[in-house]
Amino acid sequence: MRPVITLMLALSIMPAGSSLAQQPVTLTFEQALGRALLQNKSVGQARHEISVAEANRDYLISAVLPRIAATGDLTRNSMEQSFGDGQDRFTILPRNDWAYRVTLSQPLYAGRREFRAYAQAKLGVENAREGSIAAEDAILLRVASSYLAIVNADRRVEVERRNIDLAERRRTQAQAFLDAGEVTRVDVLRAETAMKAAQRLLAAAEQQREHAAAQLRIDLDLDGPIVVTAPDQTLPPLPDEAALIARTSSRPDVDIAENNVRIADLEVRKQRGFWLPTVTFDGGWIGQKSPFPAANYAYGALRFNVPIFQSGEVLARVAGAKSREKQAELALEETRLAAREDVRRALADLHSAGIGLQLANEQLIAAQAEYEQAFELYRAQEATSLDLSASETSLAEARRAVAEESLNRDLAELRVWYAAGAMKEAVVTRLNGNGVTER
Image (spheres, rainbow, N blue to C red):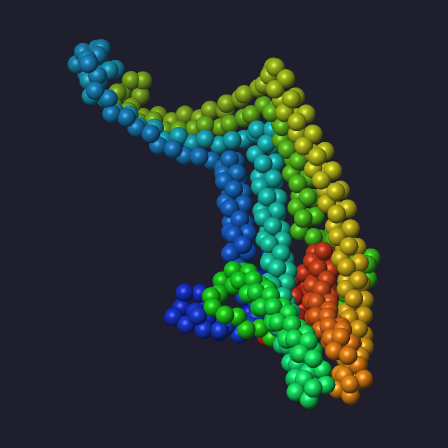
């Protein structure tokens, strides 16, 4: 079974339901990811599915093991029947009768159907394990996305507060000009309008943060406010496209599709086994009150069941199993194609996000310079309030763009690892460098 991540620092996080549950919980990126693998309910359900599959495997292996049973009965008959006289008298039908039987049954041959069913069950266990890995990868991506969304929302809140400061700075200058009789009250009202717009966007950013925090609380089984810190980008360097596509061969959904093909092939052979005879050994020990034919005796028997004519039943089942096998093969091909294109789409998104972040930073530098010059010109009454308002809006949008593109860039990189089926591999590398052990 692949390694399960345990986070030593997660022990310090207050669990839900405690007396201090409403106190703020401070999480690092590593703590959030580590706790997700330990506490998330979806991951726990997927891991318990492995136990279900293992129990089914054990159940199927019991079909080829011996079975021992004991039976008995007490009987009250309406009459008693015997023959002979004296010492030669034998009771063949006692009025009060009893008997017991201990039997053993051992299947010897059944067209190898039981062994193929057991092999299918073992593949079912592997599928359950792959499903658990898929659940872990999915929850790691979701927790990382929620965490980064909170970080981005905090950035947006700070951006909007700085935008409010810009509008306040303009309003203060406009008020000074108004008091000096240099401008009309329109300039002050424009600045106040910009402040209200920024305050509205601030409220929206706080709402987005709460939504992301709510999802994170669900995924991490936490309660109360969450405080996060911006993570440093220490994910491993991304391999090239060919290496990432090759890595998809071990994606959980691809492994499950491959196992499904093997299961379908075993099903075809299992159904063909119904054309073959079955052989069973039965043995037992019988004890009874009546001495006829014997009070105690044992027996052993080989029992055969040879199918001769089954009206096409087995032929139809074999044909259906072959069709299912073909379906499984087509599903495997489709899964491999989808995995390959997932990587290409994720890389395209990452490339676009990288360009977007670079341009947003350049836009911010230009907008900052434009605003500073426009404000100086406005203060010197060489530019109008409309000119300053336009540059102020450009600066505010540039700040928002940097925050958004930073989030998009971080999420795009995570999605590349996820598309390649290496999400946990990348995160484990990160966690192991931050106080995490494997077991």
